Image (cartoon, rainbow over the protein chains, first blue to last red):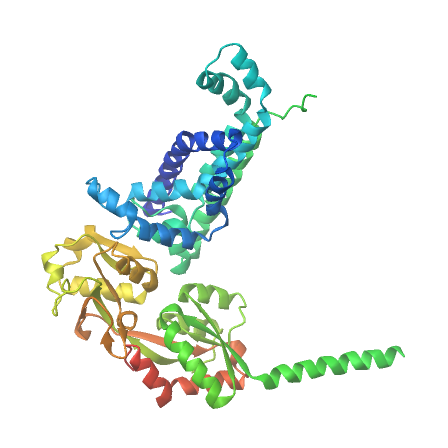
Length: 226
Length: 251
């Protein structure tokens, strides 16, 4: 049976994934919109930066975040001068690392959805005197709904399953930074295979259900209009 | 016609088998904390005996799971005593092949000069942010650190300051990047040729923790491998011993 420590890890993981997904909705949406619409020369570079966490090993990302958020790092200087202390080994630190790590999983599907809308609906909105912001919320967002569904569910599931980065900057503190994947690792390393199976099997089933829900919620793509 | 082809194939296969038998290669699973000295020892071993040692570094618990599931290792250099013992009980290691190849020493270390005093009194004052230790449930150095804190009656007082690395390598990283002000790490990580490389340190007296014995065992797969037997012997020799000591381990 799962222990109380396991339940603590489950609660913490769900909290983390929820906060990260909400944060990505706020931060990732403008990035995806900009990437989909811009003609700037910076587009390919920004796109590459957003995609980097997808191709980098989590330990590399975790290690650089540890340096960056540490006392000699840029972010560490910033948070200390703001009186926030240092981020590693804290829940906010995990949130920042996970947001960065899940960024490509959020931005890419949404960017594709925005690109699929094309110029015409927005031009039509403009001729009806909709401001760009109005056009975005009343035309682009509803049309890109499948993209929002995919992006949010993928980021949520990806944060739940994340391991390398949180291991690197977490410090394994119960109820603060010890998420499910770290707890599974602890069980496996301590040869507690029964406990590991409870959590690992649970995570497998959960992730499967999240992806099923994602596919079920996504409206069927209509055939492209000529 | 067909028969000659068959013969050739069989002959070829036989050649392959004998070639791999005389190449005398030993595959070694090495606890991550022993990576640096083992690379040196393996180079000498190759020079002195002609056998080749192929090294894989990792966590001892992971090696256990891999070996139990058929991983192709001949020798295990574990970070603890229990894992080789357990493998022998499981029948996955050769009975009577276990021996202690190194004894780890615990050190309280900080990259900041002057933070750690020569008696570890800095722990009582507790004027620091985070204290890093290895996970006491998984890593022998972590268990030793916890034992030390308990013996000093500081375990409860410092509990809120402790951050855990999953292994002694990550614990070292937490301290080296200054995210934790100080931490209990392996002496082998902070000394070179018997001298502290940087920062300040307190070598924890042996009476405060159970010796961290790192045991080796010949695994079932290496039972008939001359290179595996040779390596086990070589590790106990004077030349390997000198290397092991120079990295801050006891024998």
